[in-house]
Figure (cartoon, one colour):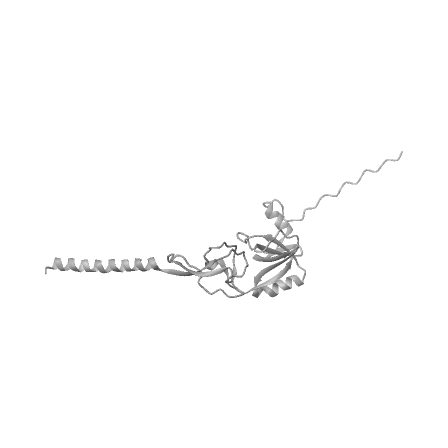
Length: 217
């Protein structure tokens, strides 16, 4: 057998092996399945994820770029991170999987709120206001009282705020784009909202002119 013929035979064998491996990989990928969690009944932000509203099922493999939530949903802990409709496949960002505490806040002039909405909470300290809670999930609302989910590690701080009668204000918000500013005074807030039109000093009005004395006849 000549050298050229031998090289051709070896090349054909290598091609056959590579083609066979690619074919087997494609065949295996076509039949691959991913075990995922799927929402079976619509849920709102903060709802506990239980067998009543989620279930596991096998779906065709979606590729290496898809990272599904494949962990274990902890009873009484794992919650929906946002509103989701039935048929939604869960990804890690869809699940709140940390220990949370439910605390009640007394809010000053709150916006209209409902279960599942998220709020940013501000505390007023004298003449200054500071953001103390971002994207807290609302559980229940009763007038100006609102129960929200907070990280368990922060529970003592929130109870301290409530016990101290610090004025708390809330904005309905996703928290996205809201800056974490230092404590801000009223003058600083007005200056920022007005594009810096004020000097930061309190604005005082001149005293009203005294009425001219009436000349007696």
